[in-house]
Length: 175
Ligand SMILES: [Zn+2]
Image (cartoon, rainbow, N blue to C red):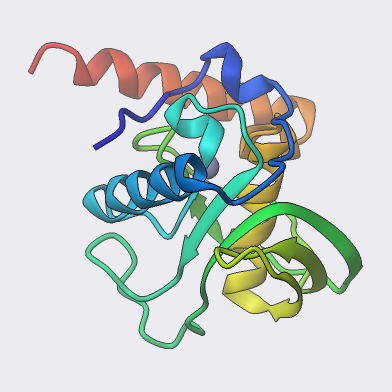
């Protein structure tokens, strides 16, 4: 299993590099990223969250121990070199992030998006997403561009969220 990098690690603030081919090395990274995401009950994971500066994201919105809402639409995919083609509408819900343990914040997202990416089989895919899967994609897409969910908050809200995060880290340490 890979180790998850937490904020404020610098790799989370840098844009990742596009992959050139889905070769055995990339396939191995994908396999390890999946293991890591499922072990941590995540619904999405970007490669720079496991210290790999490549444009790879894993999404699986199937309900798990951390996300039990069964009404959410299930979307499961490995997406590389993703691009956002179209976006519309507004949606937000409390998001969590494996790189910010304990912190949950609501950030504005588009409710409908159309994306282009390379899948695990090295095929180009164009996918339309809405609702929860669209939120997860935008969260991971931001990671790949060096943006974390707190960066989507206005100045004051961002400061409050970061203070809350730092406080929760301090409280966690003694155990
Ligand atoms: Zn995240």
